[in-house]
Length: 158
Image 1 (cartoon, one colour):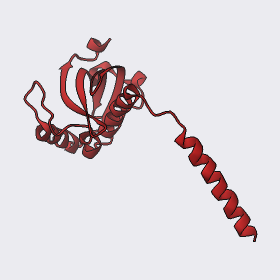
Image 2 (image 1 turned 90 degrees about the horizontal axis):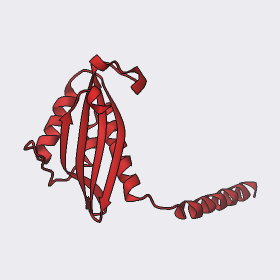
Image 3 (image 1 turned 135 degrees about the horizontal axis):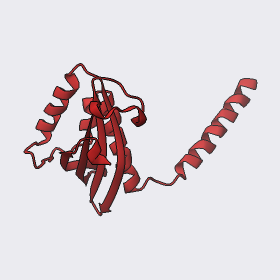
């Protein structure tokens, strides 16, 4: 009997939890795109090709002549290198227009050693990049359709 009461209470709590979680406000497209940028940075730190590539459209093309397969190959090459990678994303802006979005981000990349905080970055050890990424909604998911980036150096991000 006691087990049944405990089980009923657990089920009741679970039902309340599910009711409240179902009422939570869905994320905005801007919030989703910001989360994708952070997810890609996190995947890059872990050298997780699948974690990055899942956010890239099969129709991807950039101004440097890369398509989806080229982008995947570049990631594999970079991630197979034995050195540590630290990635810090700064200054993300998002503009959403219906099924397309433009995301601009400044990224600091440190190779060869793990750096836990942007405050610990030594300028000589870091590279700075400005990214402009065009996203398109595909089957309800935002995917990178094209990207443009400039190696500005760390001081170029300031």
